[in-house]
Length: 152
Image (cartoon, rainbow, N blue to C red; front, side, top):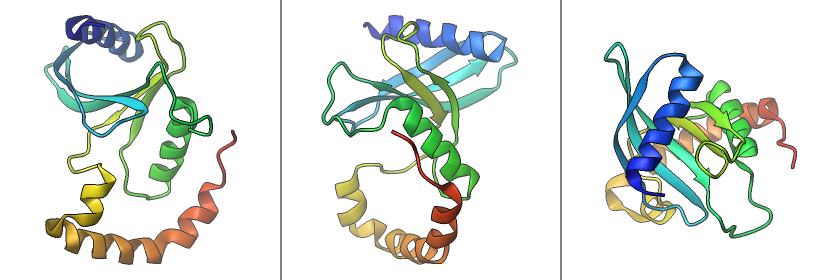
């Protein structure tokens, strides 16, 4: 699918779910996804409001049969966010192949690094890793107990 076609189809989908015109600007792929296709973009609403968002969709191939579906990933991230886990807020889920050829969801853009190797080894992230570990230790039991499980 051509970039302009993807932007147009994404714009049509967002217009349909929000009930007002939404243009898609600055659409570009994000690095790091071997089994999922992730794209950052700016949604420009009819009133001029701009939101930075990410669209995450399946690819034609799968790396493993045990990978979460888009619906399962959406549900897990929604529960995690609701229970205070630091993650992007998921916004819309589309399980249909119709709009973009594959199931997808849209979430808020969160600035940062998502490539695990870089997160774990970059010296400039050492303080963030320490802070996250301390926060995780303090909150992990309560968050895990309240989230429950995701059905496969």
